[in-house]
Length: 494
Image (cartoon, rainbow, N blue to C red; front, side):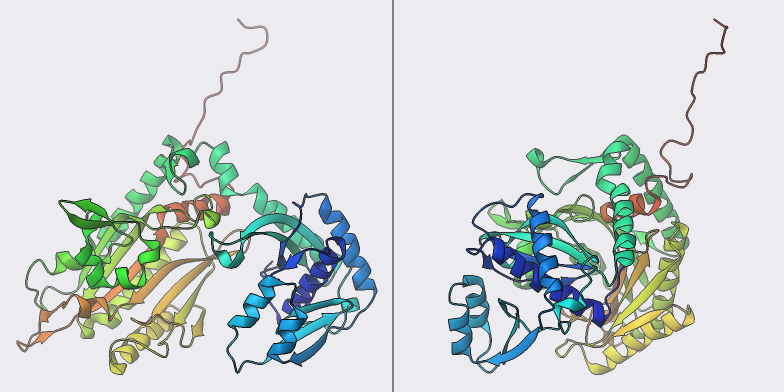
């Protein structure tokens, strides 16, 4: 159902402005924040003098229809900073945005009827271009200003907008199907898992039936990893601070890490990822080119801080088990290794019933570590593997992280929704930081290539996607209950 054409983006952005005008006409004291177009719809954030109720959406919708019928033009104007500050003098959220704009940035506003907004666009030409029967206000939610829990809680109104009533109805039917398959609802109905806010938000309790499915998945995962030349490793849940300082996590990732534990007056951290521990195994002895490649996999539980507002069932949690793997090899081996891991990934996804798979190849950003030749070789190996498998893909030029190019595999579920799952990520940073080396055939000491590979991503998130893909009706090999005996008493018989 997702449609992000330029035309629809302009339509939905325009509809968010119409909604903001309608809200201000009902609540003149309201303060407006931001209102972008999003996938399949739009929203706008407001600081309102009173709490909104679902029935209030009817009045807002009615006002919106009146604005649409007025056929007002969306007019763009460039203004000076002084004009903008004066224009939005009673709107603190807009003033904050204006004051943060670079001094040389052009400031544009859009007006329609009586409404003025700080905005870059795009918009349709007139409100009359919007389908009065092609939109619906969907829900009300709380949203912190700029996503910061320390700032004001605003009221967010979500809506969807399409080019016709027929398209709207199709989308609303699609939403009903999504709601019916919601893994949080099915998880409870099928007694698969639970969460307990009072015992710790964002943590998953696997019930016997869910744990049985997980066990089947893990058994399949281990068996196929052994068949594909991997070895399994197990690593601790905590590590001393120097480990995370060396890896760079304390410098660049500390906001997603939990506070340190003091053990024997030394700081330890819960691990947010497994890679430094696998590197420690590698460095436990001198390595030779004859030993490489290493393919080490782990179902490793990691812990990452997520804001409470973004926690979402199995899909966004604070503790999860990542099906991590690291391939450590020589530069000469990398092309074959990438092809093998891509083929393995595709096999696993198809085994679970996902047939529509697309690759996204991200290349070097403006600033990166490692030399250009390494990046070129790594990127070329990713391209060749994709071509070898005739996989549909898109290039994301400059979209790679600073430490290496990557492939992201996205799957489509039964409802046509795309989920980003597998990542095959080069890393030229950690081998350097941890001084990883091997003895080459000529007796020289060289740096190995290292590739991170999370296949399912995390067992929790994968399970959530799996529940919704099958609507809880799992294939027989995954079903926790495969048969049920129902006693039937024959009429007239004791």
